[in-house]
Length: 301
Ligand code: 5FU
Image 1 (cartoon, rainbow, N blue to C red):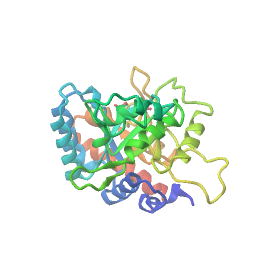
Image 2 (image 1 turned 60 degrees about the vertical axis):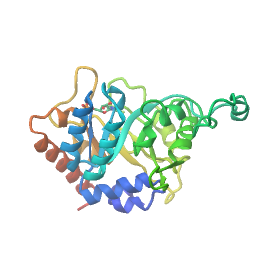
Image 3 (image 1 turned 60 degrees about the horizontal axis):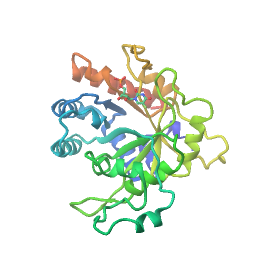
Image 4 (image 1 turned 180 degrees about the vertical axis):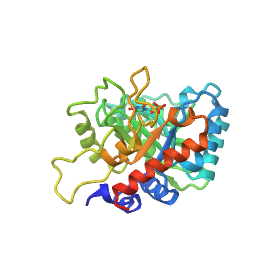
């Protein structure tokens, strides 16, 4: 199948991960492939961005660790806004540490008996805790998160042991999370070159229950896969702006057309181009329309 010319909704059927299905159908339903990079440092500012840009976006991208006055009420309110405006939350955590423990059985049995059991400590290591625990408990509220493939496949296994085993505390129904691998970065001099993206691709293919896409600058080819056997992935692309070509710290910008039409990516992630604009709603509608028209052109509509 040629996923490039297929609608998002048609592609949803080619995914097993529930978050991927939810995202792809949401995009067509809401007619948007726009995501905001909400890089603000206070709770109020973050919630304001979610409420202002919520109607225009499919994904609200956070860096939760830059919020100076983080509290649990922020999460409660953000979740409510995600339901009100129909968008998914993506914590851009860029996990990059070890996943599975070398030797889980002996570690488990050596736990002192006065330490109460916690949901995940026996099966994984650093990223398991970073995803499930700490102050932010990312897995409990973020539909999507991402990881660098640099530590090897164990990072995916570790994160999946959390993200695919969650239950809603209120309804007791499963909450299947989704993971994106960082195949390429937008910044100048990024080391994600050579065989790096294709190795990320191979890792993703082996873990499609959890990994449903990439952060990247172009749709990756699947050399070596049998014809008709090619899996689909969703591509979310940062480094998008229409008015500027970059910043003074190495960010490199491309337009929605370049990203969606020429490079075959799916979701445009825009930060300063949106929250830096004088007229938020006008900018949101411009980026939404540019991204959406590029998609319609791509699928021949
Ligand atoms: F993985 C990446 C990447 O390759 N480039 C990025 O810029 C992530 N980003 C994020 O996208 C970065 O952390 C910001 O949150 C956002 C870009 O914001 P901008 O204001 O549109 O440059």
